[in-house]
Length: 439
Image 1 (cartoon, rainbow, N blue to C red):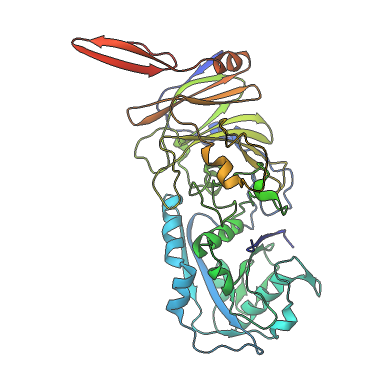
Image 2: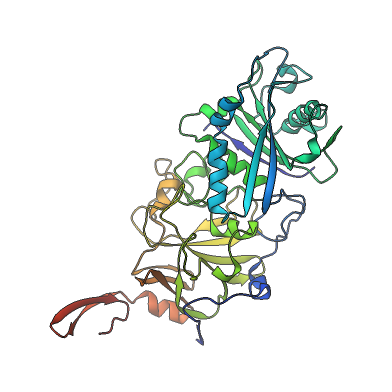
């Protein structure tokens, strides 16, 4: 059985490039597709993407089953209410935006409550904990049984995934969301096979501060192979090692500052190849133009600097409009991706600009969602990390200009500060600001 995600909801030589990208052949990006050392784990930040992952391109059919139990029976399922409670239309709109219209999930809600073959007591009280019951994972035990019941009256082979919603039960808390991916052929039923499933309690949709659509997007992303980007430790939310508020694979309870990290969107196939640059981390890069996702121009959306076979630095342009957009205008986010680090142990880590907040001592009073809110660099700001300097040069003509320096150049350039000069053009006196301003 594949590893399962768990979300408990209780808590130069200078390399001068053309300023506008040209169409990239696949082989130009291939060097930056870092390898995942552990290919037995379904959730990865490196390639190859697990062949058993739910497809991330095209129409995907998701079956929604709401179940009840003999010891907690329900009557008269209101399909419209369930759709609204789960915010399914918002999920569809979200993916249309973040995937550039390439991923199209369609949800079908089974019209009646499905009676589980066993009582709620049989399935246990601690669904929030990975427990093995009768040789099977507890959550998979429930999803398997629910789909098995449904398979007798609906063609299961017509669906790519299933979401099983727990209506309640005397022995079930319902405050849980779990995603499970099985190897192909391991989860067969009378009328087909579904090996990508989500188990979620209806009570989880009512937790204060949790938006159901964000929670379900988090789990659906797992089915497509995306890893958890928050730390699994009980104190992981303030250790300064994760992605903070960036992307929905972090804590879904905090305010998210971007729809989805560019790295995750690339792995799902949602970014045009022409808007990604794979650069060398041992060469300077000067004045590359960048724009956020959704921009109509042809500037780079993401620039990757390959450090090793399993590690890269990523610079992405953040959007300021969307579902959960950055509050910092015309900004760039810098982070490191390391495919040797497991999910839940910070395989992706933000590299923030230094401020009083981002540099503050670790404290449970300063969650990472707040610590890293100031992480992005705007015009005339830069981040120096190890032997690398990442600089947001300026915003001009609708594009963010980005430069990268390495080694001794990075050390020298880190001491350079932007300045303002006065220029006279005819009768006009202009103030020109920049790292190397000229009249």
